[in-house]
Length: 270
Image 1 (cartoon, rainbow, N blue to C red):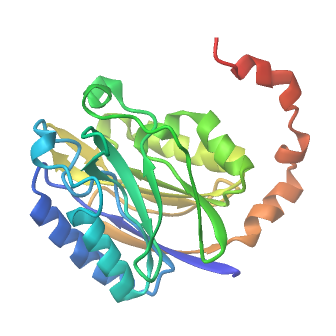
Image 2 (cartoon, rainbow, N blue to C red):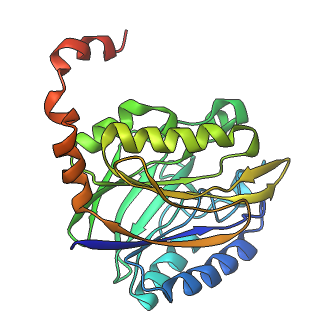
C-alpha cells in the first residue's frame, strides 16, 4: 500500500461526562469516516477527560466496557480501523488503567496498550496503574505503534518501537496549554530521530482547571508537518506515503550507523 490515509479527531472531552463524550466521539467518527480514511485516531481519555477525581465512578469495565463496545461497533459500521485514543478503565485487578484500544475494520480488537509513563505532577501516578508492555501492532499489514501523551518525553521507548519495525507512531494526548511548544517540538523530534511518521491527536478546550492546547499534527519521517490543527475542534485528513520511511533512511542512514555496543551501557538501569 503506497498510500495510507489517517483521520485525526481533535475533540474536547468534558470532565466526567462519559455519555456526552461518547456520543460526541461517535458523531465525529461518522464525519471523519466520510473522507474514507484507513484509520481514525482519537485523543487521550476521550471518554471521561483527564481526569475525574472519582475515577471509580467513571471508569469503564475491565473487559468490553462502554467505550470498547462503541469503538468496536463504529469500526465495523464504518469499515475503518480505529486507534481509540485512550479510555479510563478498570484493570483486571480492580486498579484503574489509561488504555488504548485498536480495532480493525471488522470491529475486532487487534491491540491494547496501558500507558507506561504516568504523569506524576498531575497525580496520575498515584491514581492509575502503569502498563509494562509496549504497543506494536499491524493494520492493513503495516507495522505500527502507539504511545500515550507523557510517553512522548521518553525517547528510549519510541526508539525501541522504531527498531522493532514500526513505521507509524500514534500519539493520543491531553496536553495542556502551558507546554504546547514542548508538544510540537517533541513530536517533530520523535519523527526525525526515528525516521517514522508521527500521527498525534490532542484534546482541545477546557477540561476541569486546565485548557488543552490542541495542535494535533501529522509529521513525516523528514520532520515536515503535513498538517496541524489549531486550538478548536477539528478533523484532519492526511495521506501518508509510507515509502518515505525507507527513502529517508537511505538518505541519512541513522539506523545503519548506530553503535549500540558503545552507548547501551549508559542506558542500563543503575
